[in-house]
Amino acid sequence: HFCRRCVPCTSLVRRYRPGAERSRLPPHRDVQAAVTAVVELQSADSGPGLYVLETLHSTPRPASLAVGAAAVHNFELLHGVNASCDEAGGCARYSLVVWFQIGDV
Image (cartoon, rainbow, N blue to C red):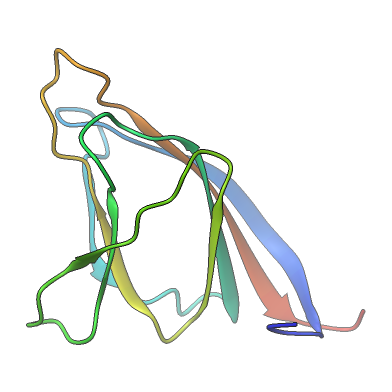
């Protein structure tokens, strides 16, 4: 197990879409959580939106997730989301995000 004492503390559904309120999420670390799980609910036709970086100046590496698949990472992972696609196509990307904290089980 990645974190035997982790318990879910926050969950949210995120929508990313060019021209909308959230089209990207710049590189960041989830410092509010010990562990984060991201479940791909609907992917955009343009390919992966989630990416990871080794440093702020490194080349982003796409993290492709099939619908229903999850990526789980700790607070140290530098990552972001970019929803760049043709708005005429299937552009919206939906993800379920669950933040876990260390707590009593």
